[in-house]
Length: 120
Image 1 (cartoon, rainbow, N blue to C red):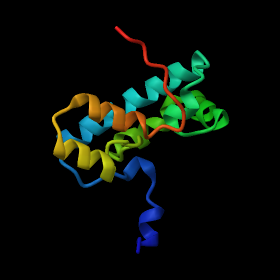
Image 2 (cartoon, rainbow, N blue to C red; image 1 turned 120 degrees about the vertical axis):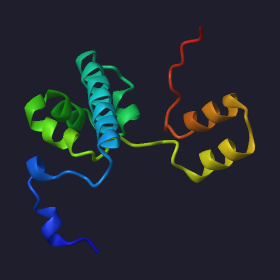
Image 3 (cartoon, rainbow, N blue to C red; image 1 turned 90 degrees about the vertical axis):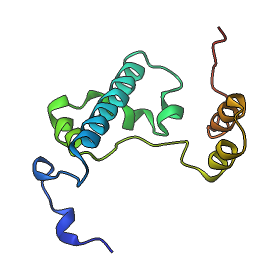
Image 4 (spheres, helix red, strand yellow; image 1 turned 45 degrees about the vertical axis):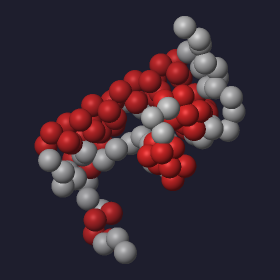
C-alpha cells in the first residue's frame, strides 16, 4: 500500500529514484509527447482523442496548460505517457516472430478505431 506521506510530496521536490541519465531520457520523452499533444490540439486533429485515449476537454486542458506548471512534473522522471507495447499480446508476437509487419498489426489492433495510415 502506498505511504500517504508520499502522496503529499510537492512536485518541485519529487525526484524518482532512477539514474540521472534515465531521468533525463524520460523527461525528454515526456516533453516530446506533450509537444505532439499540443500540435494535435492546435490542428484539431481528429485522431487526438484516440491516440491519447482522452476527451477533447482533457487534451485541451493539458495542451493549453502553462508549460511552467508542467515542467516540474516532467522533470521528476515519472513517465507521463502510455506504452501500448507493454501488453501480453505484443510480448508474444515480439518473442515469437521477427516479422515487423506482425508487430505493427498488433499495435494497430490496440486502438478502438482504424488509424489513417499514409502509405509511402
